[in-house]
Image 1 (cartoon, rainbow, N blue to C red):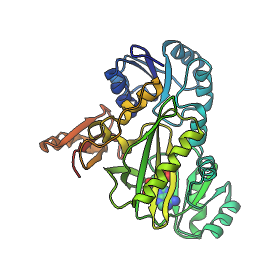
Image 2: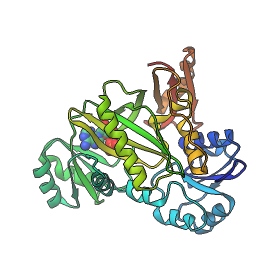
Image 3: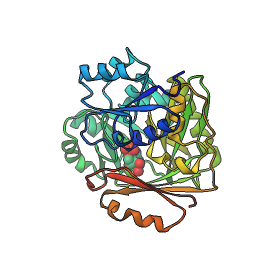
Length: 354
Ligand code: AMP
């Protein structure tokens, strides 16, 4: 057990790290944030911050010597970095969850092996394998990089086979996977927290709306997803967590279809679709993650109100975001980012009703 008063190392300095650091502080922990970027929203609220690369051995060793446990707010931390840290200090969740989540193909195969249903897919390396994959899966289809994709980046929709060369050129030589387009009615996510002792809790299903691959809005509990489909998805996420001996919050995204949940992807960390839990659940996803990695008992994931919704504040919307406060049921979170690039997640607002 990592007792309050200890220091929690967080790899990644974004808004997820910021909200983790706040939750850690509430429980009497100190957060030490480690990230390459000069601007780190998490560092504003942390006890200590290191700005260094994930390949910087000396900086990582110094970081490991100053923290009692390490966790990640960002899933693309290089495997070597996690291995170096794991040899010195507990890393929770462990490196295997990252190895799988960093590769869309490995992730689909792993989940299928546990009885999950990912979209129909095929590995693609060049024009020939893409042509064969398109012939088998049909169009429309989505070509994605196996690694380092996020917020709709690293993926291209292919409407007709003639678009294949352009799609391939756009993704520029990376290892790829082609996915059949899933005819979904809606998208939802399931967040499970798993403790050191294997205990598990899950939040109500969350309906998510994306625009251009970026999450814009979440509602919990998800309306319109049949209870049997939610149960099937929760059971799968629990099997994933158990198979990985996972510790912390694990998020999985699903497409809701007529025939049941289709697995899209997993994130071995707290998740944007769970931000509403700060005010809307008895225990927030951030506190839950800190409790889990510290070996403390998990808290109740129950809703505090019948319906909660969360809307992201993207790019320039941040300039007028304070106007949300005219609604007395709105709770505003701004991440303190200086540059409001288009589509960048600048904050979110939670409404304790739909
Ligand atoms: P991803 O980064 O894989 O989560 O993709 C971002 C968004 O693109 C998803 O949330 C969906 O809205 C859409 N999308 C991705 N893959 C598929 C698919 N195979 N079928 C239909 N929509 C998809």
